[in-house]
Length: 181
Image (cartoon, rainbow, N blue to C red; front, side, top):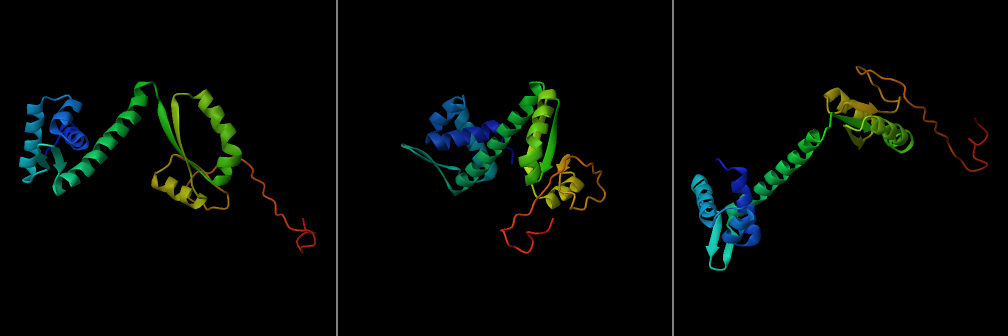
């Protein structure tokens, strides 16, 4: 099966417009070329993709399946263009940073703002995760950096103390723990 992006875009446009003529216009193709492309897809698959009527076109069951996949493929191509486009604008690198909730809320905003100001051509993909998941993601190569609690075992990873995160226990007056430090 060989469909190019123009075939997929044409098919989506024709179904969404409800007409092969309008689909061809949206795809910047002549009607004859569009018709040949759809017939070529149908020949390749050995089944009809569109029900053609005077009032327009509708996808067959196979056409509905193709439509769903074509939309996903075209969305992914657009996402790829978008992500690669930033490199053409001077992006030098991307860092995948995972951090726990405490770091995300308390310590990271100021540090990250300073880093991004000093390195405007570096993109940081920041995600919040539990410390245990961060350690596993680092071990699996799914992240470049991680900020975790020191209570999590980081065996096999290089760990550097970065920030102190003091926690306190609050209890009502008269609680047995109220008199303790």
